[in-house]
Every structure is written in C-alpha cells, then in structure tokens.
Image (tube, rainbow, N blue to C red; front, side):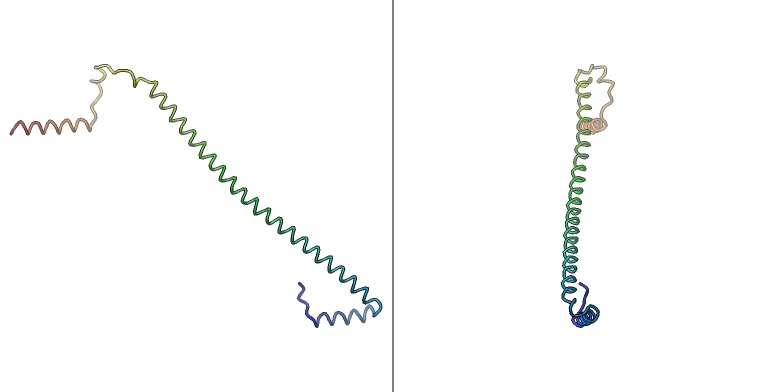
Length: 134
C-alpha cells in the first residue's frame, strides 16, 4: 500500500523507541495497529461502495439502452399504424367512390385509350395490313 520496506520499518521502530520510550512502545504499537486496521476497513468499505455504484451505473446504462430500443420500436409501430390507417382510409374512399358504378357509353368513349394498348392495336393493324398486301 505505502511501499515501505523492512529497513524503513526498522528505522521507524528505532525512532519510536527513542521518542516514546520502552514502557509506552507496546501501547503505541497497539494503538497504531488499531488505527491501521480501522483505516484498512474504511478503505475496504469505500472500495465496496464504489464497486456497487459502478455496477449500478452499468445496470442503468443497460436499462437506458433497452428503453431507447423499446422507444424506437414504439415509434416505428406508431408510424406503421399511421401509414396503415391512411391506406385504409384511402381504400375506403376508393371503394365507396364512383369506381364501382357502371360507366356510361359516352363516358367510355371520352376516356383516352391507354398508350400501351393503342401501340398494341397499331402493331396489330400493321400486321394485318402486311398480311392483306401479300
């Protein structure tokens, strides 16, 4: 923890022996041991709390990710529902409109022919003209 070697501890013990004296040295050692034990316990407790908070943070991050995926899915579902209801409304308008009523002959005659259909008719006419010429 503090990276103190054997010789450093020896020097500290000799200085403590000279300063405190031989009678009070065991009491000082016990008191110092208690303080070190309390400090280690405090550090261990703080380390555990920090690890718990990091774990809670990871769990919260995962939950936020899941919630954002769910929100995206809800948004997509809402857009799809809106599109389907728009299509349904359009189909109802088409079905309930005039499309199912019969068209009069005058109205059919006014409708211009489809370009694809007219080109097919023209090609049939050309073929029939060439057949007649032979």
